[in-house]
Amino acid sequence: MTAVASDASNRRGRSGLRLRRAAVGWGFALPFTVLFVVFMAGPVLASLLMSFTDIRSADLRNPLGVNVVGMHNYSRLLHDELFVKAAVNTAIFVFAGVPLTMVAGLAAALGLNSGLTRFRSLFRVGYYLPVVTSIVAISVVWRFLLQPDSGLLNSLLGLVGVDGPNWLFDTRFALPSLIVMAAWRNLGYQMVIFLAGLQAIPQELYEAARIDGATTWQQLRYVTLPALRPTLLFVGVIATIGYLQFFEEPLVMTQGGPLNSTLSVSYHIYNQFGFGNYGYAAAMSYVLFLVIVLMSILWFRLLRSEEGR
Image (tube, rainbow, N blue to C red; front, side, top):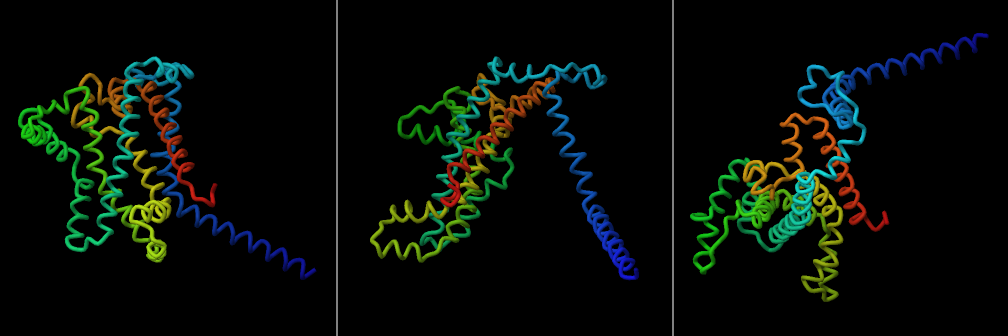
């Protein structure tokens, strides 16, 4: 009888201890949970619900008067010529800009990781400086470089007898100009990531390759790139997500022109929210989110490790 009472007392004690530990844990987690629900999960859920309604800015005074339109906003996107134009521009920006930025960042990292010892820190700072510089300041510089009459680029082309175009206000050159500017601005960040990946490759692999008679190109092809697979995956995913949300460059440099040739999906969403078409803009946002998820999955399938295949 005494033993049974003792076991019951021990169980009550352990149960009380677990409750106190759970209460302490929830006490620490509660501030983050409240902030996450109020400022993250709540708005995300609200915007998802908005995408199935015809809510506009005029409906904010009477939210209960909003009509549920189902998938109408999503089907409407297929017939929106401006959205299709923005989607094509964004696709060109991603498929041209991401490889260009990755190749430039990798080339800069390979150069700094080679025999270059003098001024290495200076080059690192120089490459990384555009990443931490305001897009407005960068835009002022690039506008000066790309001026049709007095810009540095057209002045250099004039020295060899070439009449340079109006880079930012010609529909053929505006988007490529922004792609080059974005690649130049972002290569410093990728260079830092690639440099860390290169310095983690064991030197014994290169020594074994040289003993086997591998050339520099063969070392890059069969040693460096396979060893950089996780780094390439990280850089590719981050760059693709950033470039799919292509917004600052057209906003500051061209305002989406000329003739919407630099209008991106993010910029179009921004305009629609500004026009008060909240439901339609929310539907665009979730289409963009879905594309980001699909592109990230594609990167993981392309560059997953041999063990994961």
